[in-house]
Amino acid sequence: MARRKPQDRTSEPEESHRAREGIPLMRRARMVALQALYEIDAAGHPPGEVLSARFQAEPLPAEARAFVQELVTGVLAHQTEIDRLIQRYAPAWPVAQMALIDRNILRMAIFEFVIARRTSPAVAINEAVELGKLFGSDSTPRFVNGVLGSIAEEIEGGGKA
Image 1 (tube, rainbow, N blue to C red):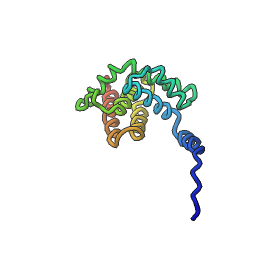
Image 2: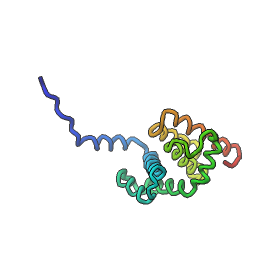
Image 3: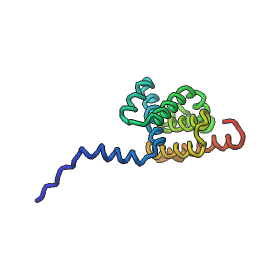
Image 4: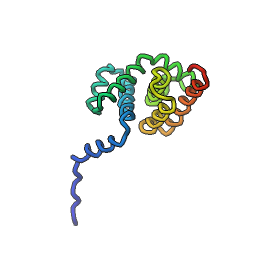
């Protein structure tokens, strides 16, 4: 009986690196920002330490690192305002009881297209839905799309979210 050759474990990091290369840079940056916000929200770790650890774990070019820092610091600086918006557009879901991933995906997208106006609503919503597919539950993409879509409709209709 022939023995199977043990798997070469040294190729795993290479494979995961190649998989990351297929992900658009700004989505990778959003993934890092989401992971940082999740840790800050769940464990209360200091944002600077969390960002340093995330950047060590996921090396990014300077432009992407700056974007991650902008997202994290912006969400934290405007969290009360952002959470009020989430509560207004998802009244059946108290923000404090929402899944950590869901609320942080919503916070990032709202910061991007409502507060910073850095990204178009369509792009921010699409990116949030993609993050929901990667990190959330089965219902996360639909929930995130519904809440953010309602905010975008009001903005596009001339209202102020």
